[in-house]
Amino acid sequence: MSLPAQQARRLDGDIGRAAGFLAQVATRLAGTSRLAVITVPAPLAPVETLFAIAEPALLWDPPTGPSAVGIGHTVMLSASGSDRVASIAGQAEAVWQRVEWVPYPGIQSSDGLAPRLYGGFAFAANAASAEPWSDFGDARFVLPTWQYLRDGERAWLTLAVEVRALAGAMSSYLAQLERLFDRLEAGERPTASSERATITSVREMDRSDWRDRIQDIRAAIEARRCRKIVAARCSVVELSRPVDAIAVLAQLDHRYPDCYRFGFRFGPDAVFVGATPERLIQRFGDCIRTQALAGSIATAPAEQSGARPSAASAAANGDHLIAAGNVRAAARALLASRKDRSEQTLVVDAIEEVLRPLCTELHVPAQPEIRALRHVLHLETPISGTLRAPTHVLDLVAALHPTPAVGGVPTGSAMAWIAEREDQPRGWYAAPVGWFDAAGQGEFAVAIRSGLLRGNTAYLYVGAGIVADSDPDSEFAETGLKQRAVLGALEKAR
Image (cartoon, rainbow, N blue to C red):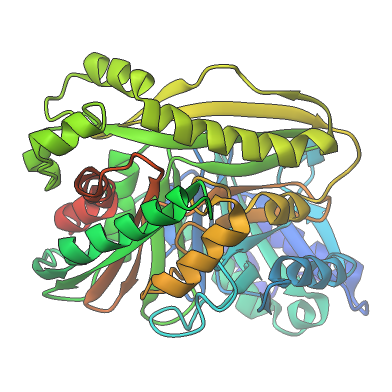
């Protein structure tokens, strides 16, 4: 199939070669029922350049490796209930059997550009079945119609399309390709509104209700019904105008460059955004990587974070929240904190229990490291291993989620408490978000430091791990500090 004459005259250079390649693929696959995924080189641009074009849209920007933006969808998978992970895996297998990936000459499979499904899961079954999460549901993954992938100084554009649709609408797809190249070559982030959306009100859990909730958990721990439960709360932020998701994502990129930055928009006005420091699982070949991330301490003045723990509560928690911005002193205090080290050990032990039977070797450091983020330090234990046999990344997701860092110990008791006592369903907060490919490889992060933006309203979710010696006031202050991740981005976004 040749290019339409008018378009052939208009397209030259890189875009002309890309357009010609699309036409060649349409000719080669004509008459088949294949789902073509066609990848061509593309101009360099900020990764969120295409985010605002269509819905659904997604952004996946990990600390290392390619960053991606997807717009539209050629395939959308949904599932619900307790078997939602297995259901998505089964649906995806049927999709992969129809996919034919056709990379531009010179693109190698080792470049990591094979087709991906992006999305995530609700924290628990039915946790995202009602407003404000109804556009998301228990599980949703998409194969974007157009995907822009950037890795350092290289970039690619991928079209996923039914071959019959491509053959019947070649002029339309070429016009779309031209518009996308034009946007990318402009090399600018989408223009945000010049008017800042100011915060008009913040509704959050009453401190007395929080204290009651924490005391209830401590009573359950004392009665040996559990060892740890992660308590979450949601603050509802009202703004003067609709939230500009692109501006928030840009602020998250500026403020948290070493985190997993993500954005998922499945409806006209609902966007789930975040910048999480926590990897759930990464699998490439037989190599896996994860981490235990639990225990935290402030490194910014309490006045900046809205956290004002009393001297008594700070002392009760081993000076758990340090008001001064002394990072070195904060790190020493965190490493010396019995409460935080105990919480970290619970997470490490749970991850090791899941992964060791699946691996020929598993490296688990004996001591945690310090992970430094804006205004906060965390205890972190990086864990890596070699799989004993090929294991789909979704099987690893199902085995690991929820870790004690977001659920509790034992898992069943903690999840039952969360379902019964938390009045605001978590939606996709603290749940797995990420991508996987046809080989069962992929990467998922834990969607903490996140919020749901919907019209003039933002729903910001934060949690704290509660163990036997947790102090309610200190834990409330800690959640206020964590809330600054998205609240600060909202305040600065334009």
